[in-house]
Length: 466
Image (cartoon, rainbow, N blue to C red):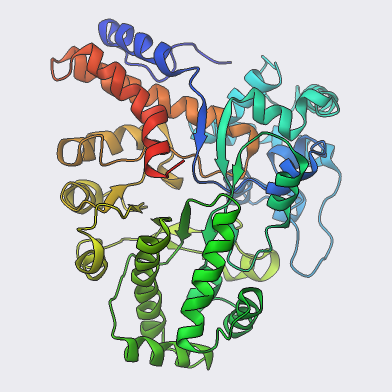
């Protein structure tokens, strides 16, 4: 299924250069500095239940496409908020997936899935209704073997370090279990405080009260609230965190006075914030988080521009993060200015900005990252985590920000077996892009080799302080 020259240039000279560059990076260790794999997998090291639970039910890229063709999420085993019935027969879910595998033609999901099927499980036929049971039986048999348990796959995938992402309210029990197990795999956490910085997050006041309990302070006062963040950030750092992560609807930042911020916080606790005030509070908290990063060294990641949980019906029935997050237009020049005015010239701070609005790359983000020492560009993300999206990213940002104001690649995935596939795609696309720069005389081949290694490995370690 896998063409050895996939994603390389069509022109023969450039393709040869891309092959040579790829040979330098294809076997480098994987640094996965941001993602959403479940730390419970590595803590318990139990077999994955079945192929459907590995590839279909937890992967919003997969069930989103199937849902778009009228297939109910309950038929794919996606849990319901009310605990109501969903399909539990893994083979039945798998057959439904296989009958509709043609829907993924030309998508990055197809690349990732085919890579996983062949490189991880040794399957060389195409998945279809005809081959569904063969795939299911073969993968099921593999999953019963020790070499397909999470820790063994972690080592087989040559993962040097992986960061999971946990809520500020998480007790990190699984990370503690990993640490106490003696296993040498490096799994770190990242601090995700959305539930306690977004006044529009469900049960916000209850979240703040729980936050204070975990921190051992009164988080319902403004100073106690900020202190709770410092305490929880230190707790996360104790379990390896090198970054915080912020999934806000906009890139808005604010730098309010203490009185203004305290007043907004009081309104948020009382449930009296308007949408504008909630956005202002979120924006101010990004600047507060940046100041805390100057104190404790955590890298600040901003993942803005998604209208999360767009379908009210899906949110009500299945909960958050079920494939209905939709990109929106995002302003960065004005939105980030308060934060950059406050801390943007501090080279010891690292703020990594992502976008779901590609039109902002060359117009806004690359010029900003090409000037402010604190700001770096995250890689092509989410809907643009594709061969075409990665290529466009390089074309739109390199001329202004260069390579060294970017941070390599992160896979941002919940689908464990897609990790090596996604990194392979990124390495191939970057090598293809570098090959064109060599072929047209803009870069020497030895320089391209160094950049290829930097993009595949070094920049992520450096940016995320791993």
